[in-house]
Amino acid sequence: MQALVSILIPAFNSARWVAQTIRSAANQTWQRKEIIVVDDGSTDRTFEIARRFESRLIKVVSQPNAGASAARNAALKLCQGDYVQWLDADDLLDPEKISLQMRAVEEMRNDRTLFSCPWAFFRHRHYKARFVPTTLWCDLSPADWLFRKIEQNLFMSNATWLVSRGLTDNAGPWDETLLKDNDGEYFCRVLLGSDSVHFVPSARAYYRRPEAHSVSYIGRSRQKLESQLRSLRLHIQYLQSLEESERVRTACLQFLQRWLICFYPGHPDLVQEMQYLATENGGYLEAPRLPWKYAWLKPIFGWNFASDVQLRVQLCKETLLRYWDKAMFHLDSYSLGMER
Image 1: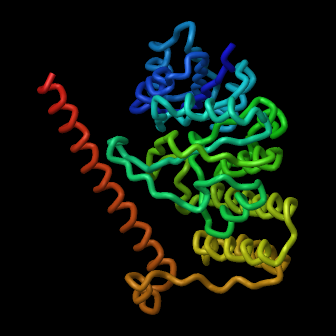
Image 2: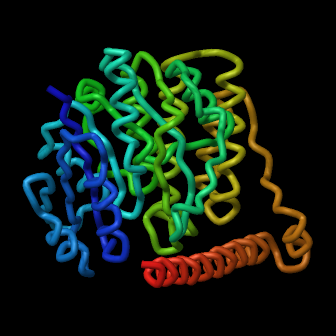
Image 3: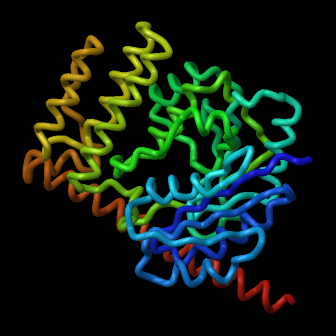
């Protein structure tokens, strides 16, 4: 009998995307699957839309708003799968994604292997997404995978992973106290229990770029910054539990230096905590530098003004790109409808 794969979808105010996401889960060519959607107290039509898909294959439940991690934990308690596929309510899977990874599972026959695959950013047109390889896109030991992630400040989309039940149980629940980067912290724990990471290059996942109001967007939120700092600290602890070496200490310092700009100078207490972490790793963090396009504003108007201008320009650019891609998506849909 085929292994059962549980596709778990936490959803909050995802009415625009959730139908497309559920379809991408239901269209997986791997036959033996279950799909569990947990609506986390949405205030839009997310639950109503998701309920339309309920069937023997798809279960939809709702809970009072408690955060993405709580919704994931609720889905985890309900699932029966031998393998777990996490899928955020705005992301997509290629139809063959799970089948290709499960083929690798059957060949390797080791439930302590963690499976990953290529992924790409998209806004509306996932079929235009560009897959840009990183140094994580290969088979690696847990220590080398986490080292590369931290050294180069890389990440993998949640949807890339296929996790055995054994690794899932070993990792424990998602941390419901982490508002930001709870996924990065969770998959570090999954990684710690694994023997290796096996990359399946033919499988594909699609990660929708976060909007300014999404949980993934950090901005200037004090709560999110505190959560991010806690996640950074845990990442360092997890890597050092796998390997104590000079290269690890150097990578941790580079990791902290890259993130410092998010905290500097508006949160001096958090900056001080980061300096303490740097000291523990035998180094010191330098004041971050703004890109030359905004650095000239600093002597005239101050760091905060220059940094805010950079942030606003980035948000404006992303908004324009999103509107353009949405218009092209509707044009493509109209053209396809005309052809039919």
